[in-house]
Amino acid sequence: MKVKQHIPKALRYSIRDFNIEFPDDSACLDYIKERRFPGGMSDCAKCAKQTKHHRVGNRTAYACQYCGNHIYPLAGTIFEKTTTPLRLWFYAAYLMGSTRCGISAKQIQREIGVTYKTAWRMFRQIRSMLSEGELEMEGPTVEIDETYVGGVRKGRHGRPMRGDQQKTPVVAIVQRAGGKVVARAMPDLTGKRIRKMIRQHVVPGSVIYTDDYYVYRRIPEMMRDGKPMKFQHFRIKHSEGEYVRDGHIHTNTVEGFWMLLKTGIRGVYHSVSPKYLQSYLNEYTFRFNRRHDGNQQFRSILERVSQRAA
Image 1 (cartoon, rainbow, N blue to C red):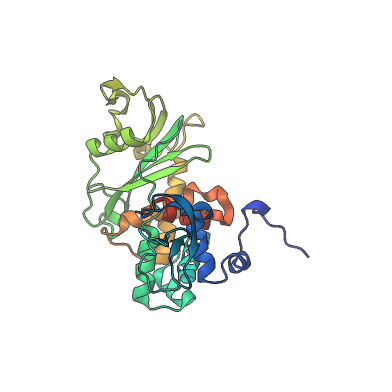
Image 2: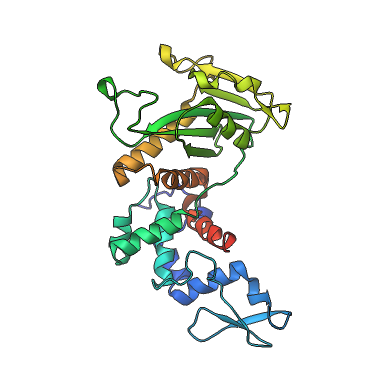
C-alpha cells in the first residue's frame, strides 16, 4: 500500500534527492559559486572587467577568462580553508535542517565519519548561520513569555522561581496564526531588557498577550523615537491558575514553542551551558520559522552561507 505523504511534493527533499544533486565536492562548490557569482560572472579586480570565470583544475578557484585572476567562492564563508570534504559539510547541514528536534554533534560524528572535534566545529559553524538577527514581527498579534533553561531548578518540587541563578532566563516573542518567533537568552528578567527586545522586534500598534509577570505592566506606555507605540495589551493571570480567557487571551502559542525547545534540549542535547544557549535558541527559532518549508530548510541554511560571506 502506498503511504500518503503529509509534506507537499514541492517541499520534499530526501537523502536520495541530496545524493543526486550533490554527488561530490565539485557539485557543492558549483552550488556555492552560482549563489555568489551567478553564471560565473564577476568583476575582475585585476582587469576591471565583468567577465566569466572558469574552474581552475581541482582547486576551489575560478579564473578570469581574460587575465586569469582568481576568485574563490568559499572565501569568507564557513567553508573557507576547511580540510573536511565540502560534501560532508553539506550533508551535516542537511541533517541539521531536516530534523525536527535537533541533532547532536555526536550524531553528526557517527553519520559522516569524522572526529568528534571536527563534528563539533562543523556543528558550531553551521549553527552560527542560523541567527534571525533584527527580525521584526509583522504583527498584528504577538505573544510574549519568559522561561528558564538549563541547570537544576531551585524551589519546592522543582517549580519555577524567578531570579533562580541555576538557570538562564529566556524571553520569546511569537506571532500568532502560523507566524515567526524570536528568542533571546538574558542575564536577568528586568523590565528594561524586555522592553528593549519588544521595541526591536514588535511593530507599533500590535496586540500583545502576556502572563501577569509584573515587568509587562508598562507595555501600553512604551515609546520609540519619542513616539508612543500604541500597543493593546492583554494579560492572563497564570498566578491564579487562569490559562485562557474569552477564547483569545492566552499565551498557548509561545508555550508550544517552549515545549518544542525544552523537549529537544532534554532529548537530544541533555544539557546546555549558558555560554552556548543563544546558539541553540537560534537553531530552534530558525527551524520553527521555516516549519512550513518541509525538507527544504537545508536550502535556507546554504542561502545563509552565501548571504553572510565576508
